[in-house]
Amino acid sequence: MSDDPGSILRLEGLRKSYNLGKPNEIEVLHGIDLTIGPHDFAALVGPSGSGKSTLLNMLGLLDEPTSGELYLLGRPTARMSDAERTALRGAQLGFVFQFHHLIQAFTSVENVLMPLMLAKGKPSREDREYAIDLLDEVGLRKYADVKPSDLSGGQQQRVAIARALVTRPALLLADEPTGNLDTKTAANVFELFRRFNQTFNCAVLIVTHDARLSASCDRTITLVDGRIVSDEVEVSQKADN
Ligand code: ADP
Image: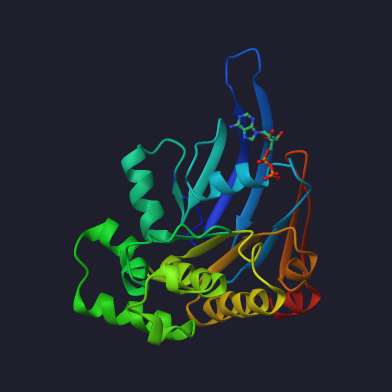
């Protein structure tokens, strides 16, 4: 069955257990209902162990729910094959992690092009130009041919952000994206997410412990013990909608 194509992501009664069928089976997500819209700029917060990483893995189609359904752009994903899930993930989702996992042997622009290379092989000249435009957006045009070891931590994180956006994803998922950055660099990275959210119409969901970062988002989803206990939208956003 198809779903409302207006939402980017919709979760319905999503549950996740680890060690299924074993004596140490444990359910860590207890029926999550959640919708992410195309303009959302949201934070996912909650205490350690509340299930944020588990939920992020579901949202990113990196792991499968035990039950429930997850619709990505209206398409039900729970019963998709691994190949279908991988293709959908590659086409529609961008990921930014605290540790950016850049390939050390590659230059900045080659790292940015990686998701396109994985999806379709050799990048075209236009792809390369777009990757350089993205590096320009993150203030790193002149570092296009530099390898990660010659960049600062903040610069490497900005390369990772450009890489996450090169496929023009519908949703950017970020896990503690500013966790290892100083305050000023963290603010710059946050600004970038904002700009991409507005300019490229890319929904953004940021998992963070940083209260200042979550307070700067338009929406804050709070997870406690595997349940969403609050989902608050900024007053100014409510007025806009
Ligand atoms: P958070 O990201 O909010 O810290 P997690 O999603 O990492 O929370 O963990 C939620 C719960 O699931 C915790 O109790 C954790 O111990 C448990 N958990 C996470 N991953 C696994 C796993 N692979 N196997 C068993 N339990 C896990």
